[in-house]
Length: 108
Image (cartoon, rainbow, N blue to C red; front, side):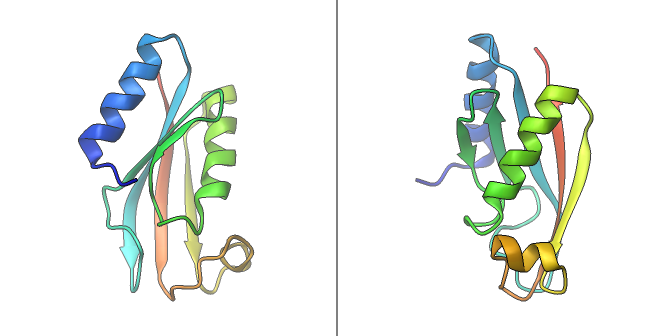
């Protein structure tokens, strides 16, 4: 199921209203072939629920794990994946491009 940016933020806001801690990962920059454009978002709550997409699935697992860490420690971070990056191969980013993400905890 695909969600647009407003849907992801609305669902994340609902999770916050329910008392759940939430992190948002946003595609900041892409280079070359990338499955999702800049501005794409993925929201994660502390229970592991996710909505949205930052890569069409190939790096979501790594992003969700990092988002859960950001929820726990409150420290935002950037993540980069690309074909030359060994982590990219490990998580399956084989599209030939690069993607940079910003992950931040959201508070009510």
